[in-house]
Image 1 (tube, rainbow, N blue to C red):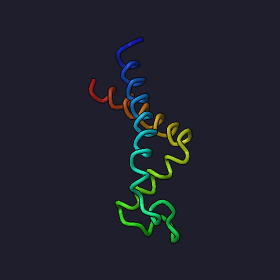
Image 2 (cartoon, rainbow, N blue to C red):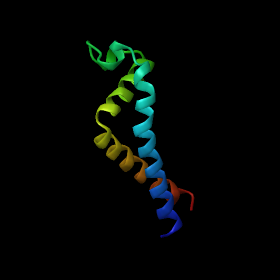
Image 3 (cartoon, one colour):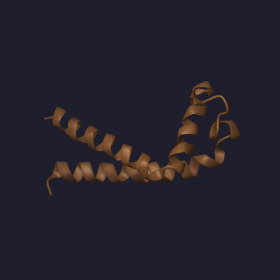
Image 4 (tube, one colour):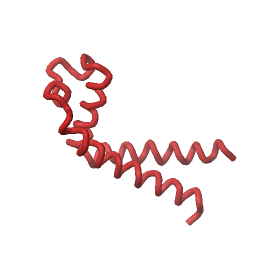
Length: 84
């Protein structure tokens, strides 16, 4: 496997692990309003929106990890091409 491919794979794996572990750590600190905003997440403060998204990622770890993996994979691939 080439260096670039290893970098992409490692970056994706680390991002997915972070995407799974970070909500586990943050969710206990979310308020009831942050976990389930009655008026929609757009009415929360910036911190509240971040906490809401972390709680949400904890509820849908497979789909959110897939999205994170795609974003990180494309980013690292394009980024490594930019520095050539």
